[in-house]
Length: 200
Ligand SMILES: [Zn+2]
Ligand SMILES: [Zn+2]
Image (cartoon, rainbow, N blue to C red):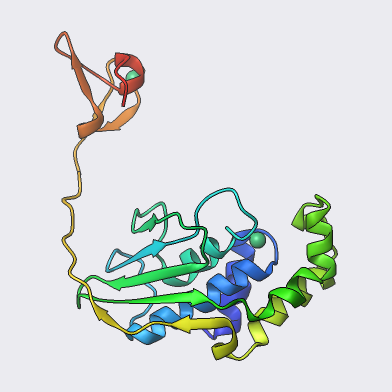
């Protein structure tokens, strides 16, 4: 799949077209290339995402998830909340890692765009005209790599894989499926946290 198609698929997954998800796609692709690895459908890769919460550029994380295959569903991505558009990609098998960060060269142009004026006025990105969405996607996508990304050195990174829980049980209270370490035993009965009343 060529990289433009990866971008289009990522934007489809993301739900709208924006500069931050596009920056995430570029950063993810560069991290893969720098380590010489491919997007993983299993768990050979791991991402530490410095995004953080409740700010306007969290979309970066969807670009990273889509390109690297490190997703919240698989659990091979974790947040290191620093409010930055940066990721560290770890190749667990070869014990190597690289950090890639978005370089804010284009921020003045982005801030001055019709898209961002509308976002600042509270318009949801999906209500902004397509051509104004594409304007920022193209700006970030077409910029020379050295202008939009800082690529760190490849470093050794030891990885100790936690054991994966494969045992599940059915809660005697609500009948829902629960991974065993989360079960509580109350008067001999296996109960989920909700039914047992135990706090996390
Ligand atoms: Zn977005
Ligand atoms: Zn229950």
